Amino acid sequence: MKSNYTFTIIKPGAVSNEHIGPILAMINKAGFHITAMKLIRLSVRQAQVFYEVHKDRPFYGELVEFMTSGPVVVAILEKANAVEEYRKLIGATDPSKAEDGTIRKMFAESIQKNAVHGSDSDENAKQEMNFFFARTERFNRDGSCCVMEY
Ligand code: GDP
Image 1 (spheres, rainbow, N blue to C red):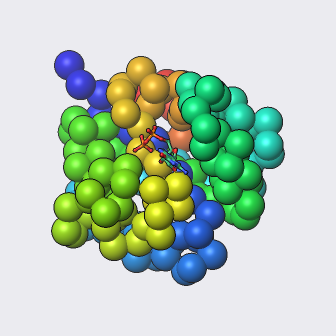
Image 2 (image 1 turned 60 degrees about the horizontal axis):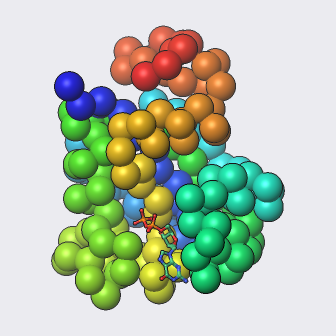
Image 3 (image 1 turned 45 degrees about the vertical axis):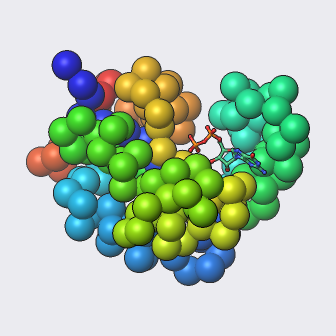
């Protein structure tokens, strides 16, 4: 049974270029409900831990620098089969390979400055939600607080 929740980041670049509104509109239009959201600036340590899986890749340092260069929007999204559905909506990591109509095709500047993050598995989604959101910051669809774990 696939989870109904995924985690996203609207990255610096998309935030500074005033794309928060249009990206959230695409997210809602695609049928996702936002159950948690905030604007924060990642510390270097937070970005390092978040992207730890890439720590041996040549772009790791640059990626951490980019992700800490300004505020980001972090959010939890709800929809049936959320992880897969959201990966479809955001498109390929490299925007030159992303399909028309995807968020990355429309708003990414480069493979690094690619507008948004979307969890790639239910397990990672859960880990990423727990990394950024306390129980008191997570809401049910009926608006009630507080969700222990999605
Ligand atoms: P994602 O799941 O589609 O975000 O892709 P990955 O998990 O493979 O990579 C994480 C993030 O690292 C991407 O969203 C990009 O911001 C960045 N990234 C991935 N590949 C490259 C690359 O080849 N060069 C650079 N500069 N950044 C990359």
